[in-house]
Amino acid sequence: RFKRYFPKTLANNATLEKSIAYISNKNKEIAEKTEFTFAIRDKNSQQIAGLIILKELNWETKQGEFAYCIDSEFEGKGLTSFAVKEMSKFAFEELGLKTIQIIAHKTNIGSCKVAEKNGFVWKTTLLNEFTPTNEAALDMELYELYNEK
Image 1 (cartoon, one colour):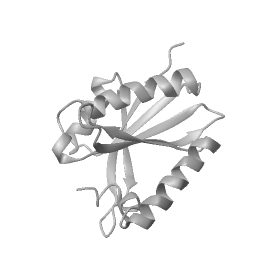
Image 2 (cartoon, rainbow, N blue to C red):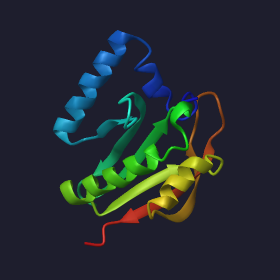
Image 3 (cartoon, rainbow, N blue to C red):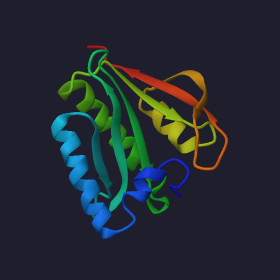
């Protein structure tokens, strides 16, 4: 399910040892404020359902980009929308960002809905923006949310 859009994350969690190193690296990135990766958990079971990542941080322009993924077992339950809502607050209020982007493929209807549900506005189609492993480059849709404060 995640091979196409999250191949590096998948590869970095292929074994327990790799997952431990991945978490350690992600904690270091948070401390350095270069990237913020958090688990999305089911409210009842606390089982990890997915990830949300605030990446491509530009502290000069005060801009960042969300990437997120959710296990099919938890899809459609509003967990990703909730995570984007809360992380947007964090990005604006705690980090002082002014713009957050979401880049999604048009066929990823769930991701586009998450963006729209959270007030992100479609801006443009980015030509040849992302190249999945062993595939041709894909055009991606750019959504943005602005901190009005």
